[in-house]
Image 1 (cartoon, rainbow, N blue to C red):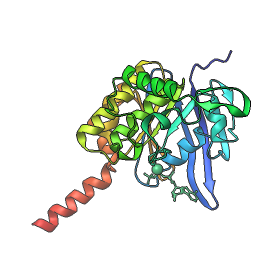
Image 2: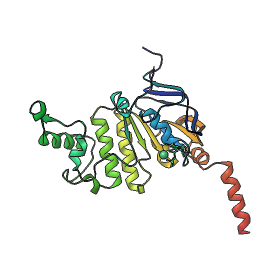
Image 3: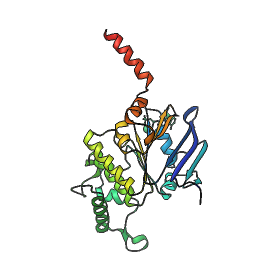
Length: 262
Ligand SMILES: Nc1ncnc2c1ncn2[C@@H]1O[C@H](COP(=O)(O)OP(=O)(O)OP(=O)(O)O)[C@@H](O)[C@H]1O
Ligand SMILES: [Mg+2]
C-alpha cells in the first residue's frame, strides 16, 4: 500500500511537442467521489494534460501516479485497462450504428464458440437499455443511429457506458462546450451521478459556471503553466471567473473600452 489514496496524481508533469512547451510543471490530483475541473483558455494545455492521463501521449518529465504507482501508459488501451475512461469532444462513436450497438462496442456479448461466435443482439440491447435507464437517461429508440442523437444525449450515453463498464476515472474533454444551457445542465447532472457512484471525474471546460457547481477542486492552466490550484473551499465562483477571464488584463481592457466611449 502507498500513502496516497488518489486515483490519479501528477507531480510536476512537463510535455513539449518539438519546440513547443505545451505543459510545464503541472501537478493535480483526482480522488474517488470527486470532480477535478481543469480550466483554461484555448491552447492552455488542457487536452495535453488529459491525453497524458489517458495514455495518448507520454510526459517528458515529472511523475504520473496511478493509485500511488508511478506509471507511463504505452497506449490508450493500457489506461482503459486501469479503469481510466476518456470521452473526447469528437466522440469515438460510429454515427450510423445504432445506440445499443455503440454502447457495447468493444465489449460485445457473444454466443457460440471460437470463430463461429456471433454478436448476441438481444443481450446487447438489454445491457444498453438497463445501463441507460439505471442512470435515468431516456433514449426513446435504441435502434436509432447514434449520429441522430443530440450532442448532449451522446455525451450522456458515453458517460453511462463508462460507468457501466466499471471505469474508476471518467475524463470528459469539454463535454458542455457545444451545448445550450439546458443540455449542458443535463450533462452536468450525469457528471454528478458518476461522482456519486464513487468515480473520480476530470472535467475540462472553459466555463467557470459549468465547473463551479459540480467541482471539488479546480486547476487553472495558462499557456501550459499552472495559474492556480484550489479546493472548492479556497475559491468562490466570482474569483474563479475573474481568474479565468484574465483578472487584471480584463480590468485594463474594460478601462480602455470605457475611455473609448467617453
Ligand atoms: N500534437 C501536437 N503537436 C504540436 N503541438 C501541439 C500538439 N497538440 C497540442 N499542441 C500545442 O500545445 C499547446 C497546448 O494545446 P492543448 O491542445 O493541450 O490546449 P487546450 O487547452 O486543450 O486548448 P483548447 O481549449 O483549444 O482545446 C498549444 O500551443 C498547441 O498548439
Ligand atoms: Mg483542448
